[in-house]
Amino acid sequence: MKGICILGATGSIGVSTLDVVARHPHLYKVVALTANNNIDLLFEQCLQHRPEFAVVVDEGKALSFREKISNSPVSDITVLSGHAALEQVSILDQVDSVMAAIVGAAGLLPSLAAAKAGKTVLLANKEALVMSGDIFMQAVKQSGAQLLPIDSEHNAIFQCMPGGYIAGDTAEQARRILLTASGGPFRRMPIADMTHVTPAQAVAHPNWDMGKKISVDSATMMNKGLEMIEACILFNMKPEQIQVVIHPQSVIHSMVDYVDGTVLAQMGNPDMRIPIAHALAWPERFDSGAEPLNIFNVRQMDFEEPNLERFPCLRLAYKAIAAGGTLPTVLNAANEIAVDAFLNERIRFTDIPVVIERCMDSTEVKKAESLEIILDVDKNARILSKEIIAELSN
Image (cartoon, rainbow, N blue to C red; front, side, top):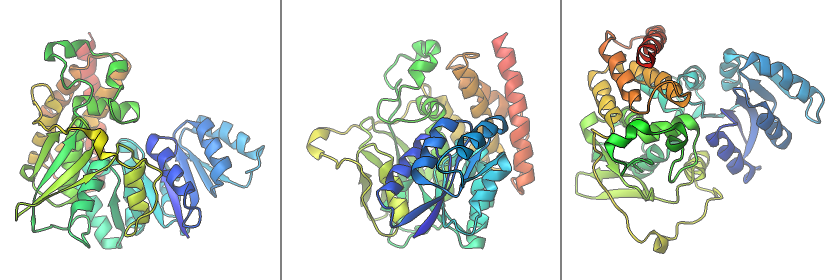
């Protein structure tokens, strides 16, 4: 039986992971669950899965949570709080696998800690690689950690790679990755009308059930831009070898094009339990709970190139990875601040790429040589992005 720590247990990935784990209680034991501030759901999860540790990052909510736990049937659970506790539970001796499912830059340090500790890292936090790709992959190699991608696209690519493939290696016979994207809810909306998009419209993804931030990223296609950068790092490929393909049915989750002309595709229903189960069972397979794909219901599959005028965030992601260094960190930080401002109705939907590009153009690109440099660049990019948003809001 393997011990698992789930970073971001109350998010959509965390909830799906617990669903899969509950189907195989003889294989996995939940050691630690973490949440930012959703203590009600975390409490329910603790009652069901009885972890040894529970982390509430929000210090104020942690006080209330401790009281709930102390007066419950699971009063023996150790409750921790604060960001440092995320790293603490990631490296526990009894933890074999860490599901890194915290959204955004907040997930970097605990994910990196797990990698340095030699854990099996189930990576759903793409920002960890976008911000610190070289440092993260170096930590994986030095510690002997196993890195398994959870994003549906990267998991699909991993499944289509040659047998025995290890993340970070170069698959010499794979010449290109076809990274699929649904196109989000505004694939057909007139570009002029996108100025008036509301947060409610942006979070209504046509195929996937995701959190607000990721749903907005999907609508702007920044999510695909971040995934493109992640794919370059995970599969050791150049940006020009990653082709984004809009596939609105979300049946093919990505493809690998080989030098002999073979294209391998991974298919399935749009259910995150499929890649989660693949990574949890790897190199074997077990039941995910997802419905089998009924190919006769698919009827047709469409593919098209993304329009960079409609989706400028994708263009900015290619610009960031081409420049390298700390520019992907700036891209990610500016995007997080801009999306938050949009969700709080401080800027328009079409202002998101404006904030990001202005921040990128106003920031000196440095070599991403250390975690300290990366975190400093991230901090300064957030400050600058807020200043740009303040100007746009006036």
